[in-house]
Length: 124
Image 1 (cartoon, one colour):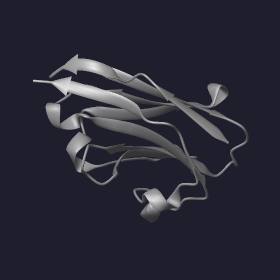
Image 2 (cartoon, rainbow, N blue to C red):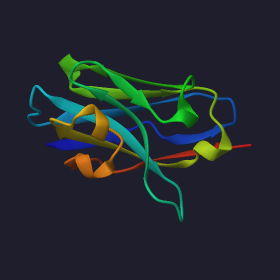
Image 3 (cartoon, rainbow, N blue to C red):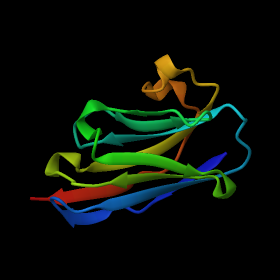
């Protein structure tokens, strides 16, 4: 499975961006896909995820601003980011894994496949 992330860029605070992550290859029917981010000098942190059931999870700092969704026909997951803040500046990574239970959805180690990062820069 290969993941191709896109959609990053330079925006101003308050603007919106939509990230896309297209998966090629076969994911099982019990897959989950997620977004993580990593700022310079920081650890990689969970942002959002969507399980095969459609259940979504978000880290507290993005709730109400970010929305994760998917297009099963296109094997693509999206991260709609609204009301962006300078602290959202990071490299964003998409990830996928099979059979990830809900209690592990925010753990990077639970995901098997990773895409290349896409840089999001939010200026103040």
